[in-house]
Amino acid sequence: MNASPSVPSFDVLRRNAWFAALPTSLQESIVRDSTIRAWRRGEALQREGEPIGALGIVLSGRIRCVMRGRRDRESLVHVGGVGCVFGWGLVQPDVRALLTVTADTSVRALVLPRAAFERLVEADPRNFRGFAALPLELMRTLFRYLGELPGLPLDGQLRVRLADLAARVRAEQRVDGPIELVLSQADLATMVGMSRQRLNQRLGELQQQGLVHVGFRRIVVPDPERLRASADDVRADVAPGHAAPERVAPARAAPEHVAKRDGARGGRDRRGASAR
Amino acid sequence: MDAPFLPAPYLEVLRRNAWFSALAPSLQQTIVRHATIRVWRRGEALFREDEPVRGLGVVLSGRVRFVVRHGDDGETVAHVGGVGCWWGLNAPRRGARAISTALADGRVQAMVLSTEALERIVDADPLTLRAFAELPILAAERMTRLIGELPGLNPDALLRARLADLAARTRTEAGLQGPVALTISQADLASMIGLSRQRLNQRLRALQDEGLVELGFRRIVVFDPIALRASVARSRRGWLRDGPRRRVPAAVG
Picture 1 (cartoon, each protein chain N blue to C red):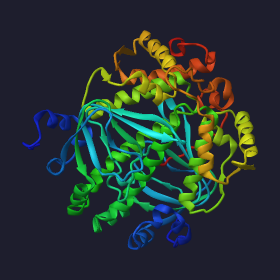
Picture 2 (picture 1 turned 90 degrees about the vertical axis):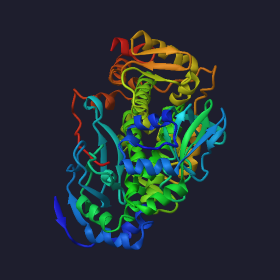
Picture 3 (picture 1 turned 120 degrees about the horizontal axis):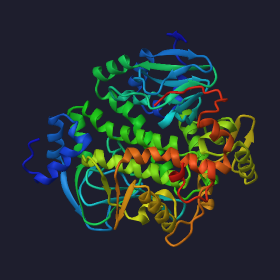
């Protein structure tokens, strides 16, 4: 891992909705007190359970956020690209990382160490408000996502997850129009609990409906809100007295990757990931 | 905490709440001094989704249902909170809007710190924002964990995970030890999980047969949230091995 004091690309930062909304003086202070660091593919930026040492914004490359969870079963929670913020738990003292974040490619990120963060807050306590916006926004996104899931079959969950990922990229990179998700189908399958085969079928169906365009390690979402709205078309009816169709059983839907994630067979390269 | 204007039972609710009891005594007193006690009748909305957030509140008695809209006319129950449950966690964010609709599920009494009062407290001492930010951080952590667990969870495992989370949350909110009584209707729980009431009832009875819960009228007693949580992995394995048609995958896992 290398450290460099060079000035980051302000353009990437200004495109990030959270950073762009900060007072200019705080933006400048963050850039001044941060460093640019680089990681090679597979290296950990942060590890689950360890103290959170820094807040980071991805300037180039891609990161994977993985949670080991209970009984050492790893779950891929998020794959983030340029503008993705990690280490938001830094805003609280004595907080340990909930996720492991690893470099999925070579990664460069702007990194604000905890000590620098504390100095900024000490110098002007009002600065804390800007940092607190990160978990507040995350809570809003997660709550909406979890509120939509009940009654959704896997197909609907896929639509909501893709719409959320696209909306997040839009906020992180201030992209107008269609949004390109740089994401492998293997990773997406893990995130929604489907086999790759089924995922591929369902993505094909979404493409036929004009809701996504599928390419190699890329999924383009032309209109995230339209994609999200389409999830209700496949929602199960769980009104009292109705026999709601249960979600597709993972054993039938995803034998290969679930078996690997559950452990004993190993086989898959478990690149860590750790961010909060 | 010395707050003679707050009835003793309500002070006890606050003392038992994990977040509030960890605050500096001076901030506890400031919050109580600036807050008001409000009452809602059954079915009344404490706030509605997308409306500006009007304050940070905590249930002192009764129960609140948090409902999320989706599509044109659909809605799901996202959470049912009892004594010690906080809402309006994004109140410290200027211009924040409510992310759900909260409905009184019976008569509800709550302590509410208005956004204006909260702003005054933060303006007087900006570092108090750190304490207020802890609530959404804890919530985001809880939700991130759940999202990490969701992929591949069958409905039985999802029910176990959700019940265990509700019980653990109730423990920290109400300061309970031992078995946790969740006062939640099966209709609401069915909506939270995405199951029909009939199927939910079948699955709850299976959990009761395993000795993990006890069912009553509008209440589910979770004997040990950690044991219930541990059964999620067994349910997952049983499901993977035997498929969805087994009624009690965890019992054989």
